[in-house]
Length: 256
Image 1 (cartoon, rainbow, N blue to C red):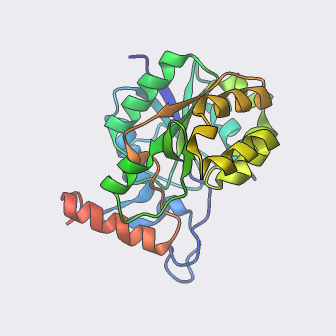
Image 2: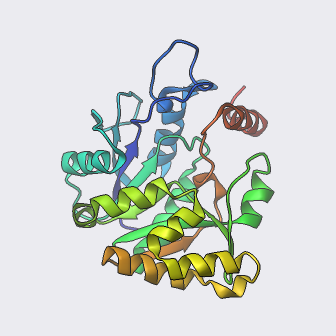
């Protein structure tokens, strides 16, 4: 399998309720068991046979990082900072720093499937049944389609030149990634109407329709990759998420 570089986006500050009172740190540096959230992510990437170099963009530290880059003002700018620093020769994996349940297997599976499509951007979608069976503790937003009921993940595989061409559109789409209907509005009114109808009549919306709509919007090749690994979508946004992850890690024996 081809190996790719990874950029971890770790510049977001910790929300109230996650960090100790009065402490200002990156969300990535929140403690979770005997590690920070960032360290859990780095360790998973290091175990992956698909990953080469790993850079983190943020005021952070972790064992196993090849590079730490001071963050800029926004998410898309931070992606560009990472790409400029790493100068990857091919695709690069963009990873959120707040998915501590991430595993090497989930990374390898996604990259393998994504590279077969040879697209500018590949994004994972996760079946609701898998998410609720594996992690019933988490409540996520789902979209009904003719192909199934899905939520989105927190990693993506991109070509560096694609980021250069599409800064503004990518920033808007990423900000809406957990707000299905807002994302549909960005893609187009026609897709929005189909998304609304599909919540009653799922056959009205196919994943392929979404892929074509996003590809037209970005003037690029885009693919949704169905993943059976819900851990790439289970991010820690609030205190209840943090407590749920702690219990999962304790049960699995990862944390004692």
